[in-house]
Length: 519
Image 1: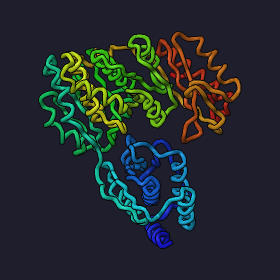
Image 2: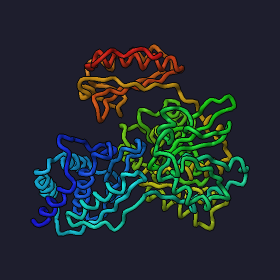
Image 3: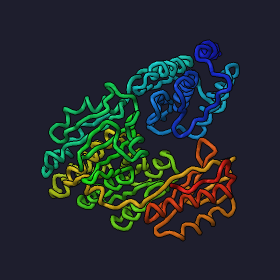
Image 4: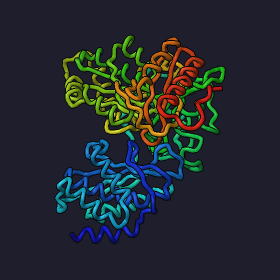
């Protein structure tokens, strides 16, 4: 086959470092940018094969999200904006780790297993973020696509904004004062900052943005961005914010968002993905009631969701709550089962999904000349929400626009939003083990089924503390077991996390020193 001669010729220009092995995971491939040239070339080839197999366009995104600027990564995107199927994730790992002399055979194996007709057209869209390594790495992807005869009709910097769509929502907030219109945005020196700068003029009547870390001088994700703010529990460095001032941070590729403010005593308050999901889902539920639409709405969480958010949604707001395994693909698939599915990981990555049937019912009501003013307004607000949100993937900018619109329509301050419920104090720890596979879980990772005795030990420890729960799960990438604990007080949460860590260390093959109590 002539194309394999081209594969061998082109792959020699993108050689694999000896001994390097990487695994395709939820985040695709992600490591230091210097080690990724061969990976990018091979993922370009895999995307071409996937396009020929599905007879549709495949996306390749070159980014490392919230990682430091010296890192980069790549992720393939299926035709409907979804992640690769598990079988194709395995192919990605196999191609990435094939030695140079074995690459053509590995490609042929995928073609044979999937019965791919190589005469079919293939189209691949290639996107990249603002990292200095991204242009060269995205070119390596394009080389891989070309090696198997694919086409790249679209490639470049990627983000999306829907400023015009947000204006109906924002302008429906006549009770919003000028100071409530102000928002500080930390762009993490990434692509999101560039797009916010482009769209500011669309929003001036309803939203006044002060943009920081806009990429003009700072380093991507360095002491800024959503991950920094969440992990460090403080605002980005070199940003002065006034007490009560509403702020948000994107991550480097603008698919995560968190909000925060400081109070009059200087205390930092974080509004993470749980708070975002609560704000959005309760707003949508109220609109459905006002519109008289019989549509079900659910919030999909992982075990990491704060217990207070779950109780508030279920008991106070009467919203359906479902729990899945950790990972966006699990959340996304569960959310698709409802008329309206809302999901946000605690890190601020998430979106809202509307079924086609829900969209049609909302549109019919919005266009019904006989509906009363209350129903009409609710339907129009729902319709605007459908238009603003990016349903295919986490999009910090569209999430920000929706959050700002909801606060505006409700006339809510960030403090009132924060006060919807109070987070239970929690603690996350890691325990090194000889083999993470010894830990097996069930019930959406909330209970351990192996090793024997571990879940019984956790249950006994949890009973010692008020409003407590704890779970353990193996890391997806390293021989580490992750421990989560929450309880009524921070002291109790810390103590419980430490005691569960000890149980993991003793029952699951811990290595190194025993976990020490938190200071």
